[in-house]
Length: 376
Ligand SMILES: NC(=O)c1ccc[n+]([C@@H]2O[C@H](COP(=O)([O-])OP(=O)(O)OC[C@H]3O[C@@H](n4cnc5c(N)ncnc54)[C@H](O)[C@@H]3O)[C@@H](O)[C@H]2O)c1
Image (cartoon, rainbow, N blue to C red; front, side, top):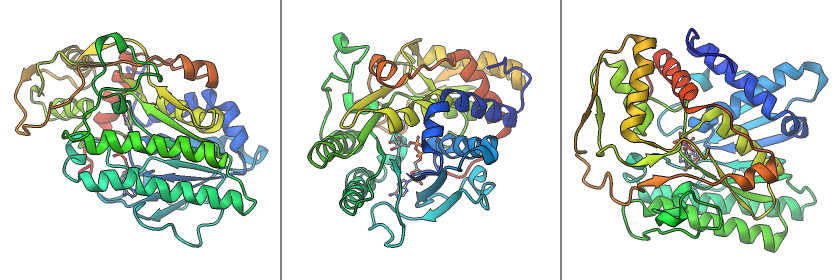
């Protein structure tokens, strides 16, 4: 990717889509002419899941059958502008559907299924823990039953991807950081994050057993802190929160003591990884998708963003610390989160290359062109 300093938000997105088309040459070719069902496709990860397919269709022109994509989403907080702009594309179907309900009887056959529908941001999932569990357990179950029925009817699916989370590891003990897929986790089943963590864990258990018992090509991805274009400024995850303060011209408010550490994986690399899990992942397996380095403290992350914001929007603020009004904000919040991604590298050829600095600069440009968003 080229230096992003002088780019517009649109150029950032176009550059990312080109980059993904290069990373996913084999996978997109394999999906040509096929139908994909993407639940939760109006969300952050949907932003690049959807646009990368449409971009590939356009670039392939008449040389390949288009990949057709149906997004099922409850649009609980409206339809984002980027998705509204895509309505009318013949390869894209948008369906208002809550995945906690039975699937539409007339939905037809899908070759690939991606289950990404869930409330994903801690601030929001704690407000509706039952809906969070239902989307990840009951919603998943409905989709798994569909895959099984399609197989029984002689129309086997080609791939199924469940969105699990790095949160299934809970707060790993120090000797298990960086964390391999074999680590079993250190997780509360009743704490404020349990509705999410435990639903993802049980979701994975469902996937493994459907894969094994019914011989279905079902895989799980465990994302490690993705960020970048498409992650709404109102989402209440750390990078959009900092960007919101920057673009409002006020000091960045940090709600922890700044010491928790994370690795951050840029959206274009992450979504490339998820498509690879979908197409090439081994049935019944789960894959860490993220980056191994650098592991940065929240205080350092804020300082790096401030540096880019100075160049991009002339920001003059600084970082200040406050305690969250939400007393549960930091309970069970892992101190460190850092993956081992060897399995994805070896099985899938996953190879994230966008550096943290480049990703933060591209994100800051994107936020400067996308300052408003519906509530997350
Ligand atoms: N982004 C990350 O870093 C990350 C990390 C770990 C796991 N994940 C998982 O990846 C998936 C996608 O995450 P995201 O960051 O795009 O989240 P997001 O909140 O931006 O998008 C989720 C989408 O799902 C939809 N949705 C929620 N409940 C639904 C329901 N019951 N029926 C239909 N639609 C529903 C929402 O309307 C939204 O469009 C989620 O399963 C999330 O748990 C993401």
